[in-house]
Length: 142
Image 1 (cartoon, rainbow, N blue to C red):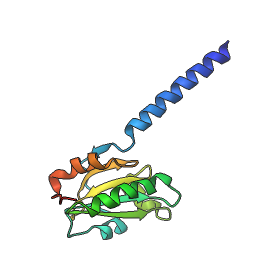
Image 2: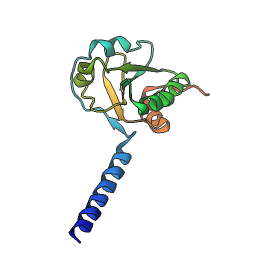
Image 3: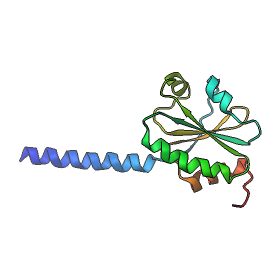
Image 4: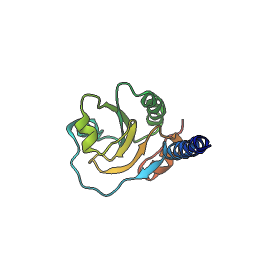
């Protein structure tokens, strides 16, 4: 009988963790006001002609990273003032560490001067991300 209780508690805990992780995936979070210097590859990826650059932190064998790219690429193409760049940090873990990135994909929205506006852990939801960036952008009709 004890084994049955252990199994039941384990299943409930696993479901609770799964629901929590699913709820957090793709959620847009406002940036914390932290003053830090951007790593070289990130600073080089910023587009000075765009109001916002979406820097997608990815790794080579990350399946959700491909989904994030499929969301962010078209979003940037049809939105004026928005630029998307993907950085593979597989061989540059110090870049992810300096940005406090704990999972891939993580998308960080940066201004041309390197100020972080927001970040998304997991695959972003296009409409939510665009709504959060709207104060910084001008959208053209698609």
